[in-house]
Image (tube, rainbow over all chains, first blue to last red; front, side):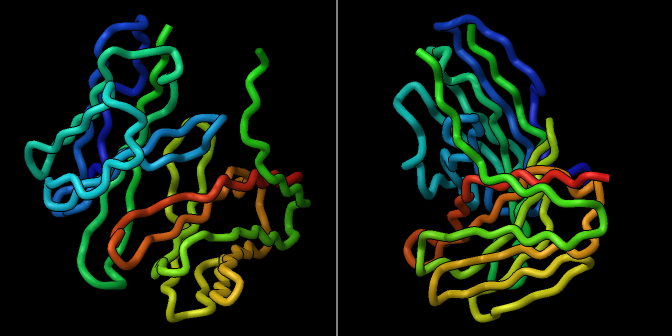
Amino acid sequence: DAGVIQSPRHEVTEMGQEVTLRCKPISGHDYLFWYRQTMMRGLELLIYFNNNVPIDDSGMPEDRFSAKMPNASFSTLKIQPSEPRDSAVYFCASRLGGSLPNYGYTFGSGTRLTVV
Amino acid sequence: GESVGLHLPTLSVQEGDNSIINCAYSNSASDYFIWYKQESGKGPQFIIDIRSNMDKRQGQRVTVLLNKTVKHLSLQIAATQPGDSAVYFCAENYGGTSYGKLTFGQGTILTVHP
């Protein structure tokens, strides 16, 4: 298995532009998570899905952020319009649900976003 | 103005020493805990996990201890090697109505000197 795949690896964009980050979870995993990592705030959970349905989006900073999971093999995190304070590394992770001990959260390599 | 980032705890050890990294978690309903290692430029990598009905679990060179009374978790690394240098995070999986929600502690920087 190729693991959790995120694209792009790096993104540089101008303030005000729309940014879309992509994630392909591990096949068969039914939970998907989006995290943001900054020096200021560490690793923050933004939103997570179970069976393609958003379960908790309380970590999404504001309405400029949106996430979708149209099918079990693909998710997007969109920022529109982007601002310099959105600059961070965004991670996607997936895991297999079910009862313990079948947990296993696997992280992608992240997308480093820079908004100038 | 000058931005202030997180001041992560740091631990410096000599190669071959044992390391102990500590973590306080927040949710008494958490039912599962994981330690992750993050190297520069990479995503968090799973090290070891433990369920809330256990107080100790051992892996290869690593041991996790869980004290639910004081909501404390520790990671012990035996015979620490330079390749162990990284940031280590504990994470807790919420139980109850927030089942499946995984949140992270702030992290500890481990530096291993040859």
